[in-house]
Length: 263
Length: 218
Image 1: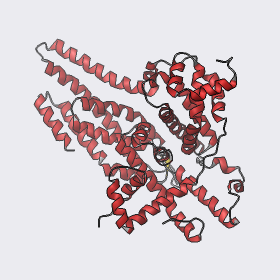
Image 2: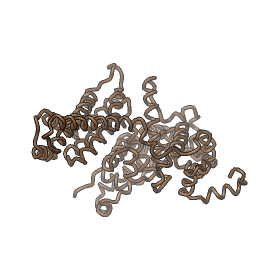
Image 3: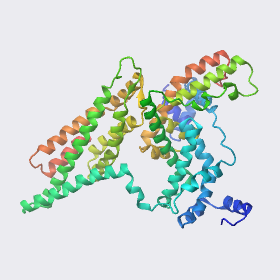
């Protein structure tokens, strides 16, 4: 009899609908899975005994009294969100890349008036390739450093990964924008690698800043299990080749994109 | 509005829908925002307490969430549910706050404990009146401490995902939005959180069950 995994049973306990009827039917016939579900249930039920203190009936009124003097006369305008520092930084980086790509396209056109729109498209793509290549390089460096992280002092029981964490947070915003660009360009393979990278960056960014060697090992294993370093290296190398190639015809670019889908 | 008698004002506040309160706030009636604050403060506090593990930080999260919600209210206009939206703002702020505190604590080299609220309280204050024996009470307190430590050992994303899914009954998409990830990753984060909690707590619970401290239904 095929048993359900811990993950499937936890999802079932959480009320997830997929496979619900199948799992319920299996549980009625399988004592082993029933017992596993009961063990999960015991842990969750014990956690339910942790209580949240009651802030009092007039809590809402107190919150209002505390925040009312700090509220401006009117809510901020809708475009304010675009000026949040992190979004500005990420948008700035990607905008700079696009601007350089545009200027490069114009210069190429001026010095080579015979060039077609196809050639200008290639120049633009090459600049994006360079930018994404650099982004992948920085990500790879951060992941390698994280994989090799050790306590500063051998007597310390915890490893401080706050520096890697900050870099992961910065890389995350850029990664999202590059992934969207890759999707718009129809490069599903690159988008998929950037999607995998995003999950790892998210994992690192949301980890505790001080981790035990066991927790660090678990992070390393998650990085390894996704094979993300290998994928990043393969794609970086390919992007490097595209960057160095004199002028790859569009047909070759398409085949390279298809090839990358296999990574 | 300020001249209105308190009782009439209260009735009006209770009957006004979130959408109407938002509309009035956006039209320049700042006091209309009070309806939203009074209506949603308790649920946001519950979430914030579970995410931060202490009352002081939870109260800061609630205030900051409503301040941010007010400042960004014009971006909310097209959305459906104010409660869900302010929840998301609170969860994001709780993540930032906890991360900042961990950084500060790491600099001072003093670990963050989610039990700080209880640290100066007499443990017996936490016990139910009908507790059967001092020995059992001590073990229950120890169990509570172990559970709080297990929650504190989760990463902030795992804790957020677990709290939102298990205690607040949020959907995976909603959790994904707070974590800035996709639903597959959010589902995986919930799983990792439960798995870690099990690894830590299950052996303790099984020992306690054998010693008769807690009952198991299995």
